[in-house]
Image (cartoon, rainbow, N blue to C red; front, side, top):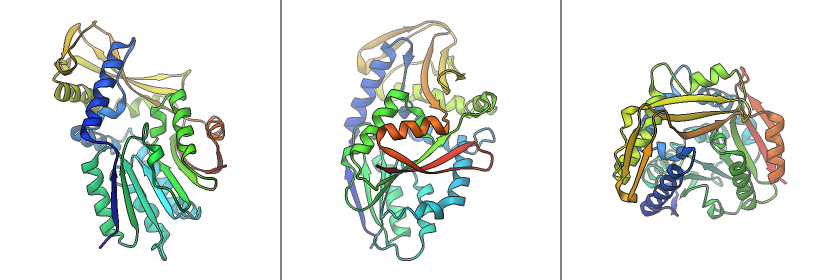
Length: 322
């Protein structure tokens, strides 16, 4: 029987409470905001999978290219515990596991994600395919539960997909500091980051011709309507993707095409949204090697390796805890 352990630190009631807090705080702010983690209900996850296959959206393909080419180099780090934050289907981790070869009986894999049902399926499937690997799944939110990651052994934390870019600089510093505080000298961080490039390409990647990203963006309003019994007129919000040259990030926004009054029953909240008013739903920061190296060093990580795809669009970095 495959070795499978699951720790649950995040229950449906916790997610409901977090959604209420985020919606109440974000929609009361000026400008209004919503965090991107609420995109990913079942419909949003399906839409995102479609996005990753769009011709305009290069990050997933570029990161996979780097993994396919450099997985042997990554595995020479010598970790016996591989932790993946935001593991999803664990597809990328399979690339690393399949590269290791030899005796993997002492290896432990720790997928970490917010969805218990999805994580149980993905962890169970991987454990069945790799019965020699001990799978220790953790249901949690990396904003709150990094201190509950399994300890022991030499650990390599993988944070892939460019997700670090969804955090603003202050939140990035907090995340990296929290992560470092739970690790030991010699542990490592494998980080996927999208790189600064032609803004026209970046905007196209977040505003595809087929309109899939627009549907994905508006889906956050569908989530609020369903989960909090709200009445956002979803079709009357237009998707926008903008490049901020000073912050060097893409912003995704929803713009009200006409004024509307929205009732959020479960929050006992009514908000008036003006015509052309926008709700920011995501930032996606793009990075330069020098600046990212400095951010990592400030948190206690020393950059060991830096790999990019052949086009230089995306980077995987391997850093060591100092």
